[in-house]
Length: 104
Picture 1 (cartoon, rainbow, N blue to C red):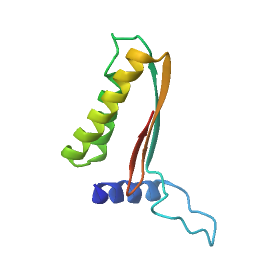
Picture 2: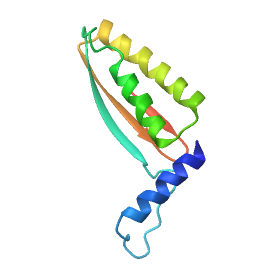
Picture 3: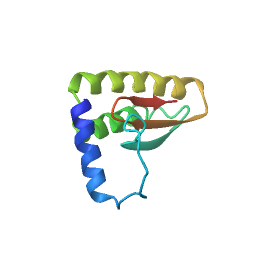
């Protein structure tokens, strides 16, 4: 996973303009990916779509399939709780070189 994130970070650095002189970025805090989703409660027709999208995004990054599966399952469980018990929720997917956060 870390190697895949490093490849993404290197590609992003090539595409971004140079930073201000003297600016040192903390690689552990550098956000490689930040994406938001909305889950509507009682929407059983679209239940599972957010976890499917998260899985697809993580596959494109090139992360380990076992890790992707774990994240997708956790996301799906949270998503189903929202669909069954809440009105609406926002989910954020944030990937850094050392962490994957999927917050409900």
